[in-house]
Length: 264
Image 1 (cartoon, rainbow, N blue to C red):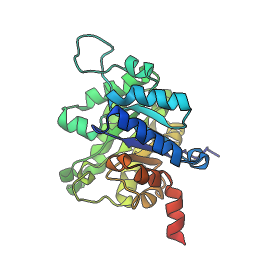
Image 2 (image 1 turned 90 degrees about the vertical axis):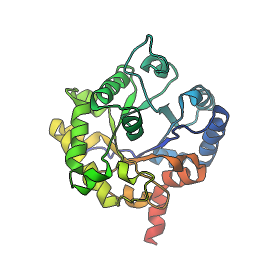
Image 3 (image 1 turned 120 degrees about the horizontal axis):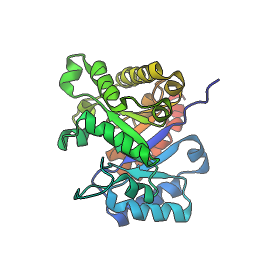
Image 4 (image 1 turned 60 degrees about the vertical axis):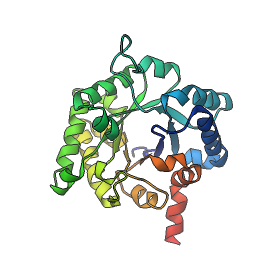
């Protein structure tokens, strides 16, 4: 029997929250989440770079069972790259995860697949877990090319990674058309693509396919999370705006209670 995959709920704060607000937000999460909550689900926050030191000091000092990571990473190790943040800098701050290829980076910063692949490798060189983000735009979905497109992104990012390196990646499917557009992805929409990602990974390594975690990100809310998490190939969520509201994010972390309430 293989070990069940442990769910991961990641809050991407994007360009929100100063370091004072970050401290308050993490404290609210830590005070509200019980040991039982944190034994069932891994909880991760992804603050802006300017908040990381404050979040590190708080989490380490008070021994909170909340992980933290970064929203981006440079492909460069050091040098004349104004505004870039290297993997070694993030590792020194104790980051355990880092996003790579988020749809907003791809769209607004022209991050092509080759750059995303380099960021995955940069994270792994510094012993951080990359969260590889993939997803399609609305026109690709309408043309029914979404699975093919997303798997192409995955293949390009993975390249010739070893089985060990492949097993140390978290995947996040975020359909661009379902983020802040009013369009809604159903749990079945999400499962279709997440299942295809797992199938691709399994072709490379059966063990990696069974163990890697695949998240869904697309305007996840407390009202929708139970249906998403009921899907067999979805192991958690990459939460955007809802992660800035502690009550909403706590509700998402406690999705099991929501699912139980729906069954009553």
